[in-house]
Figure 1 (cartoon, rainbow, N blue to C red):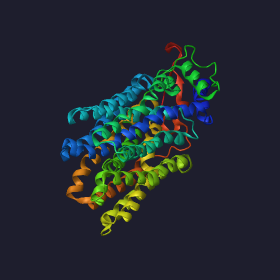
Figure 2 (figure 1 turned 90 degrees about the vertical axis):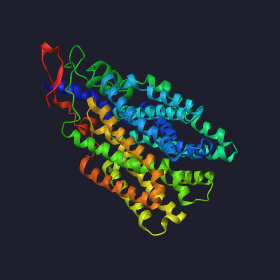
Figure 3 (figure 1 turned 180 degrees about the horizontal axis):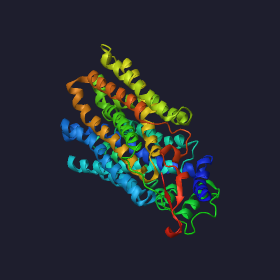
Figure 4 (figure 1 turned 60 degrees about the horizontal axis):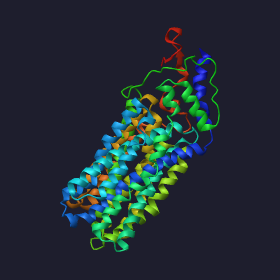
Length: 477
C-alpha cells in the first residue's frame, strides 16, 4: 500500500532533513562528557603506574596488567551493552555505564594495594566499553543526514580533551610538589567529576525514534520524539496502522553485506587501537626509552605537548571534513600516513636516539591517527548496520578495538625491552598498513545518505501484512 509505505518513510524525514539544533547539541554534550572521562581514565593509568612502580614495587607484569586490564574489560562492556541496547532499548541502559565509571574512579583513588586497584580498573573498563557502544548508537540515531559525521565525530573528539587533561592534571600535581603517594590517588579520583556531571541527563534521555519504530513498532512514540527533536510534526498519514504499531524483519550480522562490514569495522578498529593505545598508554615508557635521563615530569610535559600540538587539531580536522570528503578517505589515508611515520622511525638509523626527529615523526603519526581512523572507526559502526543489530554491531566493533588496545598496552612495555623502540615502531607500521588495505576492501562510504540507505535498512520495502495482523507491517526485503 503506497500510502502506508510513504507514511513510515515520512516519519524519519524531519530527523534526516533538520538543521542542527539545541537537541542535537544536548545529545552531543551528554555523550561527549562520557568520552572525555573515558580518555582521561584510560590514559592517566600510564602516568599512575609510573608513579606506583617504585611505591608498590610493581613487576613488569603487574605494570602491564594495570595499564591494560581496563581495555580488556571494555571488550566485555561493549559486547554486553551493545546486545542489551538492541534487546531492551537505548534508553533502558543509557547512564548505567557512566555510573560504573564514577564508582570505579572513586574506588580507584582509595586502593590499598595492587589487587584492589586491579579490580577497580576492571569496573572502569566495563563502563568505558558500554559508553563506546551506547553513545555512538544514540548520537547516530538522533543525528540529521547532512551533519551526522560531524555530530558523532564531535562526541568522540571530546576524547582529545580527556587525553590532554591527563598530562595537565599530572603536571599540575607533580609541579606543585604534591607527594607521589597522594598524587596518583588524586589523578584517578578526579576522573569521576566529568562522568558524574551527565548521569542525570543520560538516565532521562528519550528513546530514539528509530528504535521506537523499527524495534518496538511504536509509531506514536517515534512521532512524538521526532517532533520534540526537530520542532516539526512528522507527516504520518492516516494510512498508518490504527493501533499505532508496526513490525519489521530483523537483520542478522551474518547476512550479506553486514558480515563484510563487521570485519571492516571491527578489524580496522582492532588494528588502529593496537597502535594508538600501545603508544599512548605506554608513552611514559616510550619517552623514557628515548630520553633515559629525563624526569617523569619532563616526559609528562612532552606527552602533553604532543597531544596539544598534533593530536587535538587532528580530532577537529576529522570532525570538520567528515561530511565533506567522507569517512572512508579519512580512514585509509590516516592509516597510510601512520604506517609511513612509524616505518621511518623504525628504519632510519639513529632516529630512535634523536629526540627532536623522533618527536616530530611521532607527532605526525598522532595527527593522522586522529585525522584518520581513531575518529572514523567510532563513526562507522553506527551507520552501516540496521537498527535491529546496530547496538550489537557497534558493540562488537568497539570490542574489537579494545581487544587491540589491550594487546597493545599489554605488550608494548615488554617489547620495548626485547626489541627496543625501533622494533616496536616497525610492528606499528605493519599494523597500520593492514588497516589501510582493510578499509579500502571492506567498508562503504555512508556520507550524505540517510541512515536507512547507509545501513541497508530500506524503509520503503515495508508493506502491510493485512487486517488479520491488526494492520501491522513487515519487511519483505
